[in-house]
Length: 148
Image (tube, rainbow, N blue to C red):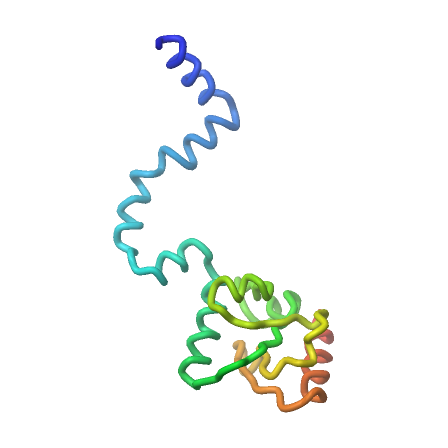
């Protein structure tokens, strides 16, 4: 028993193990009260997943409010989103589906020209816009690619 305790103490006093113990385990009491104050599911998802979740959920909320069904949203590349927003990372399609059940695509995907909505910059912020046809999709893709 004593040897086991000594082994555990030695294990957690070695470099990376000590760092892990201090950053992940010993902070539990400090974080406990913050987590107890944020018990709603959306709050906990926001804390865990951050801005990517916020972007997906705001798109999803807008679609519900406007009663938009069967949307395939063309997501801007990171270079485009980074130029017009601060700290918002446009997630990959699988992440959008995981976070909010959104069907999204990227400019390099095979189904890009099937998109019927997109995210564009308007007046200094990102907005949701309808794409009427494949010509509109081509124009948005061209705009996305023009931003470096």
